[in-house]
Image 1 (cartoon, rainbow, N blue to C red):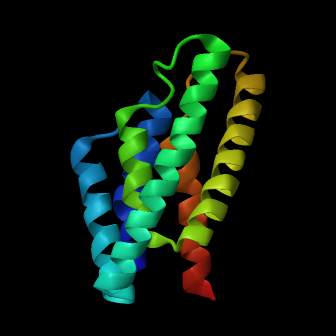
Image 2 (image 1 turned 60 degrees about the vertical axis):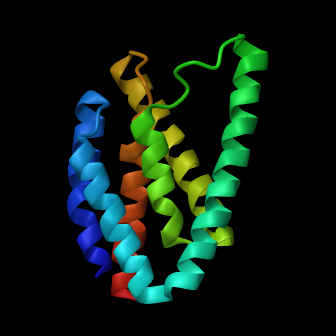
Length: 148
C-alpha cells in the first residue's frame, strides 16, 4: 500500500522542481493516501498520537526557524510556501516522533546539499525545491522499506 504514495509524490516532485509550485489535488491525494496507509498499518490510536506529536514538533521547529529569520533578516516572509507546509503536515502520520525528526533532519540536509550543488553548477540562485528534495528522500525510504 505504501508504494501508492509514490504516484502523487512523483508528480509533485516534478512540478516542484520545474516551477516551484504544486497542484492542490496532487497534494490532497498524497495526504489521503498517507493517512489511509498509516491507519491501515498502525491503527487509529497510534496514527492520532503520531500526528499530534509530529505536528507539535513541526510547529516548534517552524517557530524557531521563523524567529531566527526575524532576528537575522528582520523579515519572516517567504520562508516556506503553503504547499511546503502542507506537505510536511501530510508526512506526520507516516513516522513515529523520533523517526520523524530523523527523517526531517536528514532530508532537509540532503535537500540543502542538492540545492547547493545545483546553484553552483547553474550559477544562479533560486528558491529551494523543498517538496522535491524531501520527496526524493521519501521515495528512497519507501522503496528501501519495500525491498527489505
